[in-house]
Image (cartoon, rainbow, N blue to C red):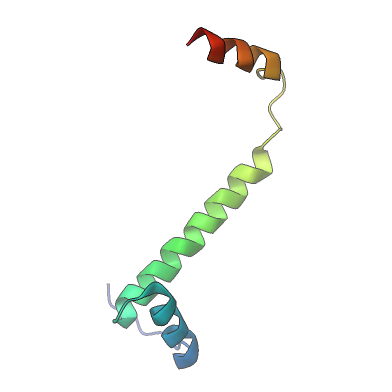
Amino acid sequence: MKTTVDISRELLELVKEAASVRTNREAIDIALREYLRIQRSAELVSILGTFEEFMSTSELDRLRAES
């Protein structure tokens, strides 16, 4: 998909250098994917420990010992 956006040249060059890529397209693609990865990780972290009546540590240890 072709899109026109106004991006800081300096920022784009920094991303290209950090990602070891040569094209603007590659840099933008990597930056977008990394942003999504971070957001998804944050969502997972936010739900950690929110499950009630989940497996206790001792139950987990027992299951590990059985396998």
